[in-house]
Image (cartoon, rainbow, N blue to C red; front, side):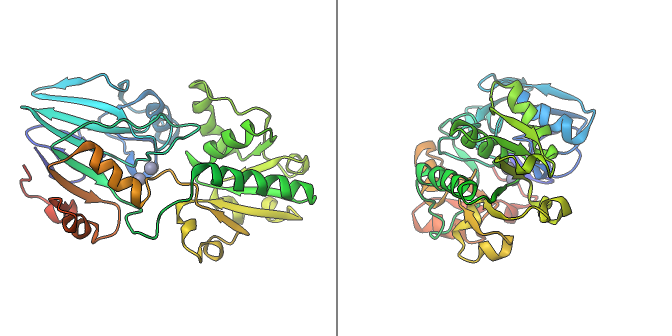
Length: 320
Ligand SMILES: [Zn+2]
Ligand SMILES: [Zn+2]
Protein backbone atom coordinates (compact mmCIF):
# COMPACT_ATOMS: atom_id res chain seq x y z
CA UNK A 1 0.00 0.00 0.00
CA UNK A 2 2.94 2.29 0.66
CA UNK A 3 6.71 2.46 0.70
CA UNK A 4 9.04 4.44 2.88
CA UNK A 5 10.80 6.55 0.32
CA UNK A 6 11.32 10.29 0.96
CA UNK A 7 8.48 9.97 3.47
CA UNK A 8 5.41 7.79 3.02
CA UNK A 9 4.91 7.12 -0.70
CA UNK A 10 1.59 5.60 -1.70
CA UNK A 11 2.02 2.77 -4.20
CA UNK A 12 1.16 3.41 -7.87
CA UNK A 13 0.74 7.14 -7.27
CA UNK A 14 2.98 10.20 -7.31
CA UNK A 15 1.52 10.93 -3.92
CA UNK A 16 3.19 11.17 -0.54
CA UNK A 17 2.28 11.84 3.08
CA UNK A 18 4.65 14.25 4.85
CA UNK A 19 7.30 13.86 2.16
CA UNK A 20 10.78 14.73 3.43
CA UNK A 21 11.74 16.50 0.19
CA UNK A 22 9.92 18.26 -2.63
CA UNK A 23 7.61 15.90 -4.52
CA UNK A 24 4.83 15.96 -7.11
CA UNK A 25 1.98 15.93 -4.58
CA UNK A 26 1.72 15.35 -0.84
CA UNK A 27 -0.70 15.37 2.03
CA UNK A 28 0.80 17.52 4.79
CA UNK A 29 -0.13 16.62 8.36
CA UNK A 30 0.60 19.95 10.04
CA UNK A 31 2.52 23.21 9.93
CA UNK A 32 5.72 22.33 11.84
CA UNK A 33 8.89 22.93 9.86
CA UNK A 34 9.95 19.26 9.71
CA UNK A 35 6.68 18.32 7.99
CA UNK A 36 6.31 21.05 5.36
CA UNK A 37 8.12 21.31 2.04
CA UNK A 38 7.45 23.12 -1.21
CA UNK A 39 5.70 20.45 -3.26
CA UNK A 40 4.19 20.95 -6.70
CA UNK A 41 0.85 20.38 -5.02
CA UNK A 42 0.12 20.06 -1.31
CA UNK A 43 -3.08 18.95 0.37
CA UNK A 44 -3.57 20.53 3.78
CA UNK A 45 -6.26 21.60 6.22
CA UNK A 46 -7.08 25.34 6.00
CA UNK A 47 -5.06 26.19 9.14
CA UNK A 48 -2.06 24.14 7.98
CA UNK A 49 -2.30 25.84 4.58
CA UNK A 50 -2.10 29.26 6.32
CA UNK A 51 0.96 28.20 8.35
CA UNK A 52 2.61 26.84 5.19
CA UNK A 53 2.03 30.08 3.33
CA UNK A 54 3.44 32.12 6.21
CA UNK A 55 6.52 29.91 6.36
CA UNK A 56 7.13 28.99 2.69
CA UNK A 57 5.60 31.90 0.78
CA UNK A 58 3.61 31.32 -2.39
CA UNK A 59 2.74 27.66 -2.79
CA UNK A 60 0.06 25.57 -4.46
CA UNK A 61 -2.29 23.98 -1.90
CA UNK A 62 -5.59 22.13 -2.14
CA UNK A 63 -7.36 22.91 1.13
CA UNK A 64 -9.21 19.96 2.60
CA UNK A 65 -11.47 20.08 5.64
CA UNK A 66 -11.35 17.42 8.36
CA UNK A 67 -13.56 14.43 7.60
CA UNK A 68 -14.00 15.25 3.90
CA UNK A 69 -12.49 12.43 1.81
CA UNK A 70 -10.51 13.21 -1.33
CA UNK A 71 -10.68 10.63 -4.13
CA UNK A 72 -7.42 10.18 -6.02
CA UNK A 73 -7.53 7.24 -8.44
CA UNK A 74 -8.32 4.17 -6.37
CA UNK A 75 -7.47 5.94 -3.10
CA UNK A 76 -9.72 7.72 -0.65
CA UNK A 77 -7.76 10.06 1.60
CA UNK A 78 -9.23 11.79 4.65
CA UNK A 79 -7.79 14.22 7.21
CA UNK A 80 -8.74 13.53 10.84
CA UNK A 81 -7.88 15.82 13.79
CA UNK A 82 -4.59 14.91 15.50
CA UNK A 83 -4.88 17.24 18.54
CA UNK A 84 -1.24 18.38 18.19
CA UNK A 85 -1.53 22.03 17.05
CA UNK A 86 -4.27 23.98 15.29
CA UNK A 87 -5.12 22.26 12.00
CA UNK A 88 -2.93 19.22 12.69
CA UNK A 89 -4.20 16.08 11.00
CA UNK A 90 -3.87 12.34 10.89
CA UNK A 91 -4.17 10.97 7.37
CA UNK A 92 -6.45 8.01 6.69
CA UNK A 93 -5.90 6.25 3.34
CA UNK A 94 -8.41 3.68 2.13
CA UNK A 95 -7.81 1.36 -0.82
CA UNK A 96 -9.59 -1.89 -1.70
CA UNK A 97 -11.03 -2.16 1.81
CA UNK A 98 -7.60 -1.67 3.45
CA UNK A 99 -7.18 1.22 5.86
CA UNK A 100 -3.85 2.91 6.51
CA UNK A 101 -3.74 5.47 9.32
CA UNK A 102 -0.78 7.84 9.61
CA UNK A 103 -0.88 9.75 12.89
CA UNK A 104 1.57 12.55 12.13
CA UNK A 105 2.45 14.22 15.43
CA UNK A 106 -0.47 13.67 17.78
CA UNK A 107 -1.78 14.47 21.22
CA UNK A 108 -4.77 12.81 22.85
CA UNK A 109 -5.25 15.30 25.68
CA UNK A 110 -7.55 18.26 25.74
CA UNK A 111 -6.02 21.37 24.19
CA UNK A 112 -7.07 25.02 24.34
CA UNK A 113 -6.04 25.61 20.73
CA UNK A 114 -6.00 22.32 18.77
CA UNK A 115 -8.99 20.33 17.55
CA UNK A 116 -9.78 17.24 19.69
CA UNK A 117 -8.21 14.05 18.32
CA UNK A 118 -10.34 11.52 16.40
CA UNK A 119 -9.93 7.75 16.62
CA UNK A 120 -10.48 5.63 13.49
CA UNK A 121 -9.96 1.90 13.26
CA UNK A 122 -7.29 0.83 10.80
CA UNK A 123 -5.36 -2.14 9.41
CA UNK A 124 -1.99 -0.44 9.15
CA UNK A 125 -0.92 2.20 11.62
CA UNK A 126 2.09 4.46 11.13
CA UNK A 127 2.52 6.22 14.47
CA UNK A 128 4.91 8.71 15.99
CA UNK A 129 6.08 7.58 19.41
CA UNK A 130 8.23 10.53 20.57
CA UNK A 131 7.56 9.92 24.27
CA UNK A 132 7.55 6.12 24.12
CA UNK A 133 9.59 5.51 27.27
CA UNK A 134 7.95 4.71 30.59
CA UNK A 135 9.58 7.73 32.25
CA UNK A 136 7.47 10.01 30.05
CA UNK A 137 4.15 10.05 31.84
CA UNK A 138 3.03 13.65 32.05
CA UNK A 139 1.21 15.01 35.11
CA UNK A 140 -2.51 15.82 34.65
CA UNK A 141 -3.13 18.83 32.42
CA UNK A 142 -4.92 20.82 35.17
CA UNK A 143 -1.80 20.50 37.29
CA UNK A 144 0.41 21.82 34.47
CA UNK A 145 -1.92 24.76 33.82
CA UNK A 146 -1.92 25.52 37.52
CA UNK A 147 1.90 25.47 37.57
CA UNK A 148 2.08 27.86 34.61
CA UNK A 149 -0.41 30.31 36.13
CA UNK A 150 1.27 30.14 39.56
CA UNK A 151 4.66 30.77 37.94
CA UNK A 152 3.29 33.91 36.23
CA UNK A 153 1.38 35.32 39.20
CA UNK A 154 4.22 34.63 41.65
CA UNK A 155 6.77 36.39 39.41
CA UNK A 156 4.49 39.40 38.96
CA UNK A 157 3.82 39.54 42.71
CA UNK A 158 7.59 39.62 43.35
CA UNK A 159 8.04 42.44 40.83
CA UNK A 160 9.77 40.12 38.36
CA UNK A 161 9.04 39.76 34.65
CA UNK A 162 7.65 36.30 33.83
CA UNK A 163 9.26 34.96 30.63
CA UNK A 164 7.56 31.97 29.03
CA UNK A 165 9.50 30.15 26.30
CA UNK A 166 8.05 27.61 23.89
CA UNK A 167 8.15 26.66 20.21
CA UNK A 168 6.89 29.47 18.01
CA UNK A 169 4.10 27.41 16.46
CA UNK A 170 1.70 25.58 18.72
CA UNK A 171 3.16 25.68 22.19
CA UNK A 172 3.32 29.45 22.54
CA UNK A 173 -0.23 29.95 21.24
CA UNK A 174 -1.44 27.28 23.68
CA UNK A 175 0.33 29.17 26.49
CA UNK A 176 -1.17 32.47 25.27
CA UNK A 177 -4.67 31.00 25.34
CA UNK A 178 -4.26 29.38 28.78
CA UNK A 179 -2.80 32.57 30.29
CA UNK A 180 -5.36 34.87 28.63
CA UNK A 181 -8.22 32.68 29.86
CA UNK A 182 -6.76 32.98 33.36
CA UNK A 183 -6.79 36.78 33.26
CA UNK A 184 -3.16 37.57 32.39
CA UNK A 185 -2.15 40.37 30.01
CA UNK A 186 0.41 39.29 27.42
CA UNK A 187 3.46 40.69 25.67
CA UNK A 188 4.32 38.42 22.76
CA UNK A 189 7.30 38.15 20.40
CA UNK A 190 6.56 39.14 16.78
CA UNK A 191 7.32 35.68 15.35
CA UNK A 192 4.79 34.11 17.72
CA UNK A 193 2.19 36.81 17.01
CA UNK A 194 2.60 36.31 13.26
CA UNK A 195 1.49 32.68 13.63
CA UNK A 196 -1.09 33.53 16.32
CA UNK A 197 -2.96 35.56 13.68
CA UNK A 198 -3.90 32.26 12.02
CA UNK A 199 -5.37 31.08 15.33
CA UNK A 200 -7.33 34.34 15.60
CA UNK A 201 -8.72 33.82 12.09
CA UNK A 202 -9.95 30.45 13.32
CA UNK A 203 -11.82 32.08 16.21
CA UNK A 204 -9.28 31.68 19.01
CA UNK A 205 -9.05 34.88 21.09
CA UNK A 206 -6.02 35.82 23.18
CA UNK A 207 -7.36 38.79 25.19
CA UNK A 208 -5.03 41.70 26.01
CA UNK A 209 -1.95 41.17 23.81
CA UNK A 210 0.79 43.61 22.77
CA UNK A 211 3.84 43.01 20.59
CA UNK A 212 7.08 42.46 22.49
CA UNK A 213 9.49 45.28 23.17
CA UNK A 214 11.52 46.15 26.27
CA UNK A 215 9.11 48.85 27.46
CA UNK A 216 5.94 46.84 27.11
CA UNK A 217 7.55 43.80 28.72
CA UNK A 218 7.71 45.82 31.96
CA UNK A 219 3.96 46.51 32.08
CA UNK A 220 3.08 43.61 34.40
CA UNK A 221 2.49 41.31 31.46
CA UNK A 222 3.50 37.71 30.86
CA UNK A 223 6.17 37.77 28.15
CA UNK A 224 5.92 34.94 25.60
CA UNK A 225 8.93 34.15 23.46
CA UNK A 226 10.33 31.49 21.08
CA UNK A 227 13.42 29.57 22.30
CA UNK A 228 15.83 31.52 20.06
CA UNK A 229 14.88 34.76 21.84
CA UNK A 230 16.92 33.71 24.86
CA UNK A 231 19.95 35.01 22.94
CA UNK A 232 18.24 38.32 22.12
CA UNK A 233 19.92 41.20 23.98
CA UNK A 234 16.63 42.98 24.61
CA UNK A 235 15.43 39.83 26.36
CA UNK A 236 18.66 39.31 28.29
CA UNK A 237 18.45 42.87 29.66
CA UNK A 238 15.02 42.25 31.19
CA UNK A 239 15.60 42.13 34.93
CA UNK A 240 14.57 41.03 37.39
CA UNK A 241 13.00 38.16 35.49
CA UNK A 242 11.98 34.52 36.00
CA UNK A 243 11.87 32.08 33.10
CA UNK A 244 9.98 28.92 32.27
CA UNK A 245 10.22 26.62 29.23
CA UNK A 246 7.22 24.58 28.12
CA UNK A 247 8.12 21.15 26.74
CA UNK A 248 7.37 17.47 27.24
CA UNK A 249 11.15 17.06 27.65
CA UNK A 250 10.65 18.79 31.01
CA UNK A 251 10.20 15.25 32.37
CA UNK A 252 14.00 14.97 32.16
CA UNK A 253 15.44 16.22 35.47
CA UNK A 254 18.31 18.01 33.69
CA UNK A 255 16.12 19.89 31.21
CA UNK A 256 16.17 23.08 33.31
CA UNK A 257 19.93 23.35 32.78
CA UNK A 258 19.75 22.33 29.14
CA UNK A 259 17.28 25.10 28.38
CA UNK A 260 18.91 27.60 30.74
CA UNK A 261 15.68 28.52 32.50
CA UNK A 262 14.44 28.56 36.11
CA UNK A 263 11.77 25.92 35.48
CA UNK A 264 10.53 23.53 32.78
CA UNK A 265 6.85 22.57 32.75
CA UNK A 266 6.10 19.40 30.75
CA UNK A 267 3.16 20.83 28.84
CA UNK A 268 3.39 18.70 25.72
CA UNK A 269 1.70 18.59 22.34
CA UNK A 270 2.58 14.90 21.95
CA UNK A 271 1.03 11.80 23.52
CA UNK A 272 2.88 10.40 26.54
CA UNK A 273 3.81 6.77 27.23
CA UNK A 274 0.34 5.73 28.44
CA UNK A 275 -1.49 7.78 25.84
CA UNK A 276 0.42 6.10 23.00
CA UNK A 277 -0.73 2.67 24.24
CA UNK A 278 -4.28 3.89 24.76
CA UNK A 279 -4.31 5.22 21.20
CA UNK A 280 -3.22 1.85 19.78
CA UNK A 281 -5.95 0.08 21.76
CA UNK A 282 -8.55 2.41 20.32
CA UNK A 283 -7.58 2.16 16.66
CA UNK A 284 -6.90 -1.62 16.78
CA UNK A 285 -4.27 -1.94 14.04
CA UNK A 286 -3.21 -5.29 12.62
CA UNK A 287 0.28 -3.94 11.96
CA UNK A 288 2.17 -0.97 13.44
CA UNK A 289 5.08 0.99 11.98
CA UNK A 290 6.82 3.25 14.49
CA UNK A 291 8.60 6.52 13.81
CA UNK A 292 10.04 9.52 15.69
CA UNK A 293 10.69 7.88 19.02
CA UNK A 294 12.82 5.38 20.92
CA UNK A 295 14.55 3.13 18.38
CA UNK A 296 13.43 0.03 20.30
CA UNK A 297 9.80 1.07 20.77
CA UNK A 298 8.73 -1.54 18.23
CA UNK A 299 10.44 -4.23 20.36
CA UNK A 300 8.39 -3.10 23.32
CA UNK A 301 5.19 -3.25 21.23
CA UNK A 302 6.11 -6.78 20.12
CA UNK A 303 6.46 -7.77 23.78
CA UNK A 304 2.84 -6.67 24.20
CA UNK A 305 1.82 -8.92 21.33
CA UNK A 306 1.58 -6.36 18.52
CA UNK A 307 2.99 -6.92 15.07
CA UNK A 308 5.30 -3.91 14.97
CA UNK A 309 8.38 -2.69 13.17
CA UNK A 310 10.21 0.58 12.77
CA UNK A 311 9.29 2.56 9.67
CA UNK A 312 12.86 3.25 8.53
CA UNK A 313 14.04 -0.36 8.50
CA UNK A 314 11.36 -1.12 5.98
CA UNK A 315 13.02 1.36 3.66
CA UNK A 316 12.35 0.80 -0.06
CA UNK A 317 10.63 -2.53 0.24
CA UNK A 318 7.06 -3.44 -0.47
CA UNK A 319 5.23 -3.22 2.84
CA UNK A 320 1.75 -4.36 2.06
ZN1 LIG B 1 4.74 18.77 15.12
ZN1 LIG C 1 7.15 16.56 13.98
